[in-house]
Length: 360
Image 1 (spheres, helix red, strand yellow):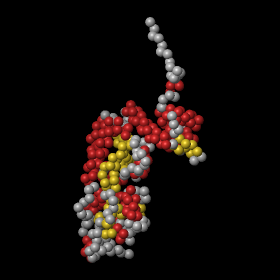
Image 2 (tube, one colour; image 1 turned 90 degrees about the horizontal axis):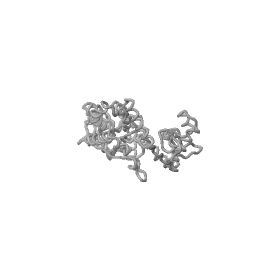
Image 3 (cartoon, helix red, strand yellow; image 1 turned 120 degrees about the vertical axis):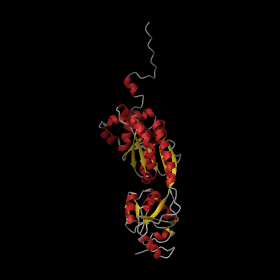
Image 4 (cartoon, one colour; image 1 turned 180 degrees about the vertical axis):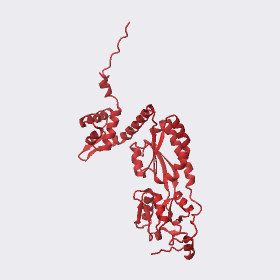
């Protein structure tokens, strides 16, 4: 007896081609991400090497399947709507996960991409990599994951995280928005102190307790605009009613700044961990200022859905453990080191206590 064919419901697709248009597919995800990155359907189509009408159809299909408009189009280009802004990070995440599955099939290890602010490269990354190394070897042996770390400022990392371009981000506290960031998991790790530094032999820094205002007469080398530590210093100056510092030199890295300060009369700022390393080498002194600069909160963040992957959840826990270890390293020291003996010590003996000598 032959089985009786099941009757197709009125809502069922009539063909395989129609069935493919009833489910969001990888081509839709690629189309949405390409349009968002290019800022226009025309440029996105060129980048994908496909006709613009075909890409417009894929966008229309995606909007129909999701039941909402994803992009606004005007003379200035194509911009995501509120719904589009919410959908795009998930698109990027899904594409990354799909790529990860394909890499496993091709016997290539998929990557965990970690974004990190410069100051945390000194405090968080050493213990994190130390904790992660045995797990990374296990992951490599089983063809699971490999780690890639990129360094950037908090603003850039936050943008990359919300767009799904990095899996995890170590950055300062996220920007406050109404309703918060429900799709993201954010956890504060520790407060990272910032200190003012000068060369170990600086002749003009002679007191043990200096008002920040008095240091404005001296030359400075500072991080570039947009860096967290620079913004923190400028907020302190604004609160005191003082003018902003116009630095002699701006640099991208703390290492460049420390090297410059060690051999000049310029002052700078740096994470305490970085500064004390140069103090121990006899190259710098920490300048105790009043008021002290506020610490920079360091947090970790990721897409909540990412932690459904066991290796991603393991990596998140490794970051938290490394953060607990880093918190012990950045604790303020009992007293700032004075650097090596020599010209700096002679200058301190020559100047009256509690004064700040400023040489022309």
